Image 1 (spheres, each protein chain N blue to C red):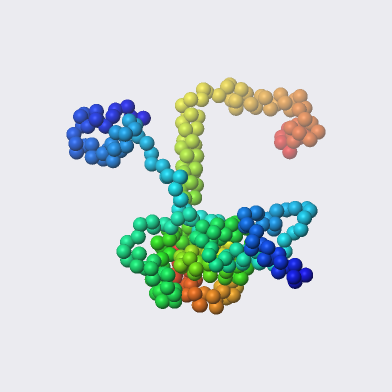
Image 2 (cartoon, rainbow over the protein chains, first blue to last red):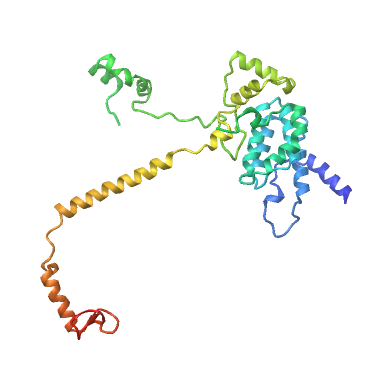
Length: 136
Length: 176
């Protein structure tokens, strides 16, 4: 139900974020985390107002370690975290990492950039293509 | 490893000849033998890794004054930065871009070339061996002996159904 989802999200803010995500474990028993829960958890992580640089790095490195390309809304929260930390370079690095994560699926990255375009324009984050660093 | 210390080498050779070895002298003086440089693993490291985009520390630790003022500017709106400034900020933080990290090298050509080269050398060794090392072949390989051997096998009817002798036409006295 909606109220229980809201309670889950609030509780997940208070809960210390050191446990491994449910989605990464192949339990035959126990509740499987849905995609929405996964996304919500990560958005909450990056949306912490006083997130510090270590938490940003840890979060991004962990997220990139998963077998998935993060949803644009998670990346939006991560880019805003970079803004709070005054770290433009990491924001560009995140975009590079997303493109690399997509691997052979070349249609994913343009989609992500398209979804993030309002945020990129608002914060003034260039894409690697705009800086010309997408080619060696 | 070298047994001579820097001091002994210095007295044996002139100062000028020692110049190329002088870099290792400082290490040799403290250790008594050559030690290779090792990264200090007790401090945050930098890395360029595709699977770990944000390393523990920025690439450039010590910033020039221009870089420092750029870092100050970074605290304001990023829309006010030019593309060159944004690129400079990236390069302060990171050594290689993802594209540079993923760039293929030509190492495979060296490896394949090396393999073929050493196979070639092996071929030459085998050839030399064949000519200079092998003793003369046994007399049972002479043409005359082998002809007699074939005749004996046919007379014995070796494998007459589907094998050796089945290929010989006994009426006509020739191979089928």
